[in-house]
Amino acid sequence: MAFTVGYALIGGLAVALILIPGLSYVLYRKPHKIYRNRWLEKLTIIYHDHIKVIIDKPKAVFYTLGLILAASVIMTFTVGKDFLPQLDEGSIWLQVQLPPGISLEKSKVMSDTLRKRILRYSEVTYVLSQTGRDDAGSEPFSTSHVECSVGLKPYKEWPRGKTKSDLIDEMAADLNTLPGYRIGFSQPIIDMVWTF
Image 1 (tube, rainbow, N blue to C red):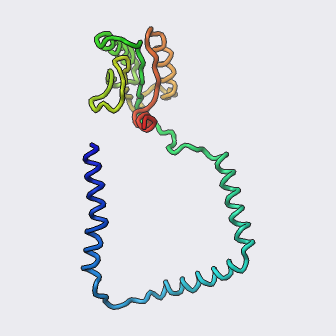
Image 2 (image 1 turned 45 degrees about the vertical axis):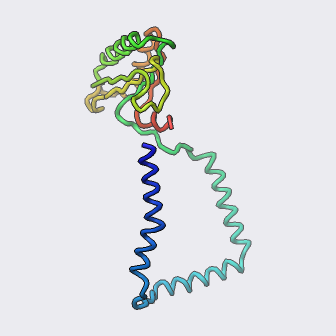
Image 3 (image 1 turned 60 degrees about the vertical axis):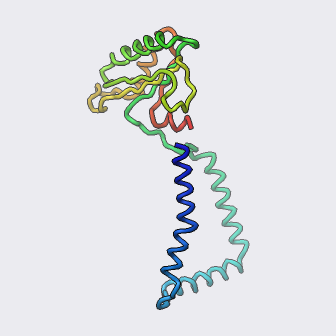
């Protein structure tokens, strides 16, 4: 993956520094008819007139900039600071921590127990679990770490009035009764965003 990204960057750099300037030279070396853009010339005159007015009244400019700065400072305290809004991805992602030093066989048994317990809920369509680290080895998890992807039915098929947060609360209360499990609830995409 790193080599692929490196080759892509080198290729993009070569195109930007060699190919595009060379093609531009070949295509534009002989000037054709010069076109005068009358709209742009009018806008340029209007722009210069406004610049003269602004330079003549610097206090008005600084008051305006101060007002914008004050509004920006106020907004940093009142507006949410999340880059991504909280979205419902339609599934649940579990981060499960088992007792440290657990054997792979025991970890498999405990993840099977967890899957069977989650599949009892009528809103759940599937449960996929992964014990330990992934094949890419990008996360240094041991056999005591299990990740579960929980697929959910469409919300219109759920009992009337039940929400995803209600289901998560039920699951959390139920799964906390299992000895040796520490479970965190999230969603697949946002969990990967938080990881990076």
